[in-house]
Length: 250
Length: 250
Image (tube, rainbow over all chains, first blue to last red; front, side, top):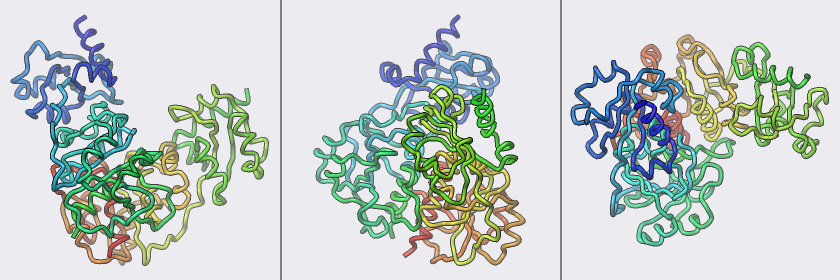
């Protein structure tokens, strides 16, 4: 009976509305859960795991109230899992505390305008973490970074990168002193940019690109030159190419 | 009744075995199907579409035997669709004729060692098409480029890029005169490579990377330097960054 209640609660967390109300998110699988359990900035609220996993990971559970640890068999884990093959453990964590007054000076940041695909969001968070980009500013309608698919694909990077959901137009107005570079199908080649040590790089929605309003407020349009015929590059790939150029500009 | 038979046949094409036996693949949605119908190197065998789509696209159907055109309502289309929201039209096309003796001289090519994720494969085909890379050599266990998810995400790029499935070790032996650059977590920085006008860039499996055997046969290991903490970059993103550097090396 207890299991049923927990299962229902965890299932509800696949919806952003409930994640926001509760201030928590779900992570699955030994690798992700272990990494999050070792992190100090989030707190584990619930663990559901197979007996074997609990036995082998006792040391990770030392700070967790045993009331919140549930042994579950594969069948039950399957019913809460959002993965194709449920994977030994699922856990509920508190979200990271929001970063107030993130520092955007003397560094490179990213801005996402209505990015929709969880896979792309996860990949972009990993790219940011790879290139040492600390802040990603997202429009309010961008996919939630605590979406289970995003969590699953970013792993530890989610804890190291700050995601700030806000009204982009107002944000750009308030931060006029920082240059905004809009990734677009035309503009200055990323290979011809001067060395940039401070700036925010704007990436648009997967099918619509950047909105007119945002494009107009940008300081400069930049582009990845094309040598072939494809119509466009995937948003995450474009982000990777742009950051690699900017961060390792020689 | 006829519809049922067609539906069963098309459903079978979600399996590589049947696609190989029949030498065909399935494409869905107005954009992809229109692009493929205009291509000369593949032949349309079956079209299933809503009445409205057939009416609006009569001109695209001028070379197709009407016996192979089936009007279907949303319900039937849904039963053959592999997309979340079936999209007006689905069609069966013959695969591209294989390219014999692809030219690997004086150009940049890609080689994929057991790439598994259809999304990554689709993205890499688009990247190749963007950067004018004509040939992708894939290990025999790499995901099929006619997998419906790959087809859906590559669109026209699938027709412009040659995919060759073969034994990579033998292929490398036969092409010893061409330099092979292995993308890896260590090696020469891609930003420090000399100008390369001929070479094959090796990308590994999503979780295991390149196999030991392949790594050993490569001419040089190359890497994308890291400025942050992520464990790895997504395979498609790494491909994009490497090709952007090599193709637009200044």
